[in-house]
Length: 254
Image (cartoon, rainbow, N blue to C red):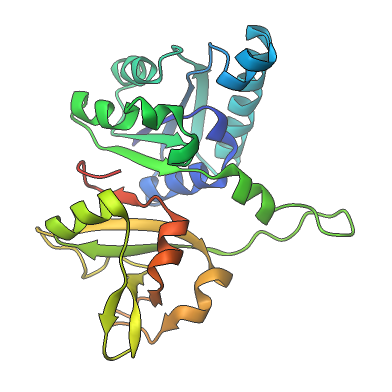
């Protein structure tokens, strides 16, 4: 199985590794990582950073990502791509012939790629699944920062949680995020999410996913469901903070 990963500054994020592992689903995977980083970022242009510095930083991130993927058991290689992320993606698809594409961006408020509709345009041009993940590096750095003794703090256990919706609800989620749903059995409002897709997917259902630390969601865990999946009744505000959500096997949402 071949997986193409397209990212720049977010290459160092844990979510990139987690997404590749999830897409591979235990199969042997060959991964190509493309960093469209031949132009300076807006910050570097403002501060006078050089193209050589931008390129060196991108190459360092690329090398770290490839090494991490190799350590995880994937056959991975990488290269710098066209400065236009959409063109870099199309070039790599033509050369590498992947089964799936993963595009990683900053959160919407800080993502130039999302402003330029890179994910949406890639989905319009390609006939293979294009998955979008959001990496909040500020949050990830905070969770693995050193403790008071100078050692690396233990990485929190992370869960991939799913929510299933019909088409109309999915479009609303895409546009405005999750809203709390009343559930009389729980005596309150929230959003049902589970850690599995078994028995939950139908032809007219769209699956959304977020990744959360167990510590964050543990207070909201409920008794197991019919298929023994772990169930969580999470406040919509928490789910939205963990997102934007990743749409699973669906080309209509990001």
